[in-house]
Amino acid sequence: MGKEKIKFRDANIAYTISGEGKTLVLLHGFIESTVIWKDFVPVLENQFQVVCIDLPGHGESDCIGYVHEMEVNAEVVRAVLQHLQIKACVLVGHSMGGYVTLAFAEKYPELLSGICLFHSTGLPDSDAKKLDRDKAISVVKKDAQVFISTVIPNLFAPVNKEKFKQEIEELIRLAAQTPVQGIVATLEGMKNRKDRTPVLKTVNFPVLFIGGKQDIVVPLDTLLPQLSLPKHCQSLILDNVGHTGFIEAKDETLSMLFNFAKSCLKN
Image (tube, rainbow, N blue to C red):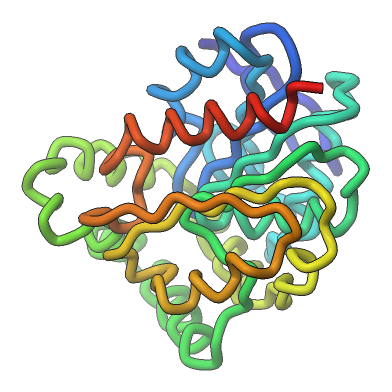
């Protein structure tokens, strides 16, 4: 599927759109792109209009400065929706895409019928995590490929690393296309993001959490307390799944997402 593009602050922002009906917007995570949704879109587009966006510095979208704040990413999503004249949607974000989703929910709640945090969290980086981000930035500036090849296999549950060896290699190949500036700017943006658990307490639309019991990026003990924050919350917690449920538990996550979006957009 070819990508459309719009201009945002003189940068090209790429997206895909397919299907008809009410709108479901899919956001990828760090060093990913719209490609991660390739198995989801053909199913979802039978029921919804599906929009997938390459966030700044990822996929076919340009970088925007030296720090990609989550708020700026949210403005990019808003710009695409305005361009497409979309006035309401369900917004789904994987990992970093979930951070963007919550920034969007804070700025533009009137545009949302529901959100899904797909291996994501409302919590900010801990002090230790911020130090890890700084170390990652140093490694990326020296050799981004070393960083990518180390990080991506660890996103999978240990039991799945051999099973999904081909998929891991494909994610590494795709991530290697991310420019160094995009990686660094996004690491800076994630490091500086604020606590958005208060947003989860105030939203009036449904929230779906999808988590993995073996996720080392969003550990289960930090995720579970957040399930009680929204007024309307659903969750899918998966065993033998790390941070990539769209691969490790494709059928379960796709089915849950489909039904959640359908319930949010039924009116």
